[in-house]
Length: 523
Ligand code: C2E
Ligand code: CA
Ligand code: CA
Image 1 (spheres, protein in one colour):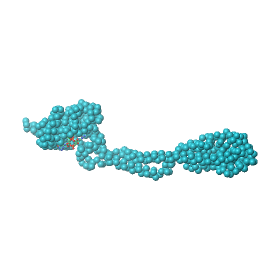
Image 2: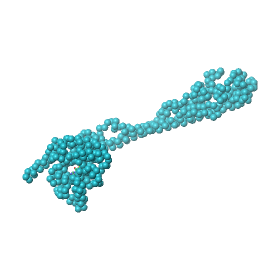
Image 3: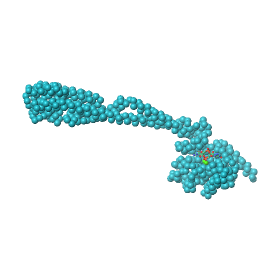
Image 4: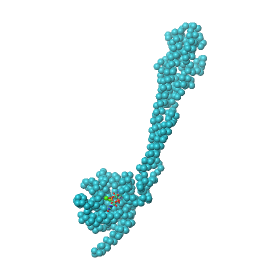
């Protein structure tokens, strides 16, 4: 089969589509995984912030409990209450120190007993909570102090920063986590910094406590989503890769299968394998050669000569019929030109045109170039349009046919009788000839009804004042019948089969000399 050989398109053009189809499942799969990872990380951050909030609430609850126990003792002499303060430090988990103040004066601590230090309630957020980066006893060690006031008395219970940082580290072992109290925040390394805690690029979640004035925020650094995808979904990534390769190779195979014939036509066109054959058209009365129909053949390097009905439909479908016909016209002009002087003026050259040619005005240039090769009036170009595919009377088609007419190009309706062209269709495109389809010619000598159809076609053409060509004339009976019924031109194996240019011209010359002899004899 000639339509299976490899084409000559570029590597990129051939592989780009398959590559795209292969990449599609990979990229869309990665996009879904990326979205899923982002979603999971956001959920993780939310969960982490929630847990941290619960834990800090718990710690502060135990501090508040101690504060509630010792607050009623505020104002009493320190030596009387200091043991109760120490008891709270021992009893309550997380509590590091319990202190009492009177009139904003810290006068009793669990560690030293009696003590003297001024305090400013404004240091405490909402008068309740103060995140300090150290105090006189442990200067560089973070401390969270809970303050509870009743009148002039106040209880201050502190939680060691070690517990807080530890909680941040343990709960936030995957996500980053900060504790924010007022204008300062605590990192998981236990450092207290001023200002707002830095945000997180991925899945940031911030929660505020409903019991105490603090908040926590959790999240992940930039690039974490990719790291998560690579770490958590290696099997899915590998599966996507396999899917991508499968899709790409399948697409490549299908594309190869579907585009190979078109590529093969393109290659053959570039290699000049489409060549014209010529079949004579004779005048019925005199049997002189009035013209020829140009029929395309494919001279395939390995398959030999290929019939047009095997490749013309594909050429029409792919649009290659336009450059193929252009090449055919150029070759025909070059082959006919040296013999043109031997033709009777107005020698008809019929060329088959498909509906595809009528979508733009390119055909005009092709016809003009063809006619320019010959002396004016030496040949008549006849475009044969099959009745099987009717041309839409678009503005472009109307313009095309009107300009063709101006150039002296004639129009024939091919395979007439097999389609559904109307009278207005014939008028619209200024048709000059009807070519009666061979199936009607073959009816001659058969049943009377079939012949009746043929006669109607001949009558119709005469009424429309159109020239008639009968195709597929193979027998003398057919020739005589058609001549007797006024069909002007005949074409068929009886007068000559389609032949390559050289053979066609040999026969043409022989026919000319036979003509001369018959003229001489008759004289
Ligand atoms: P078509 O235009 O109707 O051409 C006439 C066909 O009938 C030709 O077949 C010709 O060889 C064949 N034929 C001529 N006389 C006889 C006869 O006495 N008996 C029989 N049985 N057949 C005869 P071919 O060359 O195989 O072409 C087939 C079709 O391919 C053509 O039908 C035409 O529709 C298409 N074709 C050929 N060349 C071209 C071309 O350059 N462009 C386009 N668009 N179509 C073409
Ligand atoms: Ca034809
Ligand atoms: Ca035909």
